[in-house]
Length: 420
View 1 (cartoon, rainbow, N blue to C red):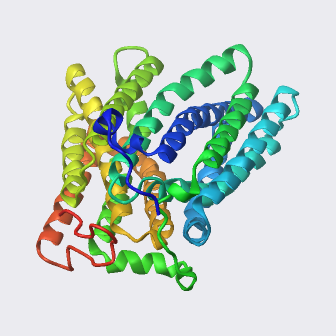
View 2 (cartoon, one colour):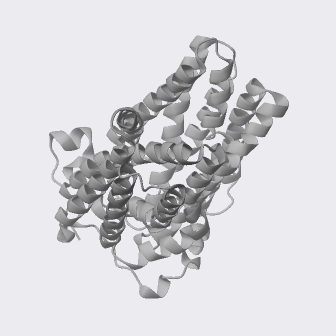
């Protein structure tokens, strides 16, 4: 078990960066997230070029994210059974090799549609273990007390990658070809392996785990034993279905705008990303986390997204920044609250369940939003999505305040009195 990190100027602003192992992890993550977004854009483009079919682009996306929805709990059990650091070294090493090979095949003209689809499926299978491990290892790197700050900083890095990666990929596709985006991601994954290997195992905050608790059901039992965690994960699923389906809504909104649709869509997405980045950075600086913040962020997100339905350009711009800000605040706070509330021994399985509801909700919410847009209209769909999130947040708060189930669990480890 590592000692607490020394404080200083860096710790005063971003406390988690005082931990050496975490500094390596977050630095490699910044490069890795940018490169991952580069590969996502390049792979979609490559599939579209090879097939000319938007349906096949959707299938490629499904292959990349579907396995986590199906096998997520199994992946979480693996993450809780073995060293998370070692698992990430393995998954990132395989991802590096796959990306480099795919890049070489694409640059040589051998990346046919079947090759691209197989690569998508392989990447999807890796995420079954890689994604829960990426989330669960944060507590091992910084300890339970600094976990909220570290998770918030991870969210900042993700948003930076979301801003930088697609721009770099677009430039690469236009100038030198999509294949180099795959190669860049392979190099970034290799850097992640190096960063993980340079971390010091004796400075990790790993807690003892019992081999008798390796079953998939133990993660569900943990959620049942800590009611606020269960309510948080349920709220994440509902908000994901209702309010986190912005691509569908923003494309329709851009089509209705007086300017150029594609440019407006890019502007709308950028405004959301800027708001999300601001939210993530502020949370990294102020790492306090509570169930009240989770529910409050969901409620305000619902209000702001409802106001987005108003047909005014300035209101639209302000609301898009607000949606990004409060959406990121909700996701980061819920992630940190769940991870800090559960024991390390089952954190991987609980986070796998969290990710399954988050991604599954978004996958379900997209088509539902499209149906509402087609049958009721765009403004009505936007308002309905916001009102649904607001209603879910208020209902969750009312149920919890009514006293159903204990607020505090004795099984949450150090500082178990999770703030209400």
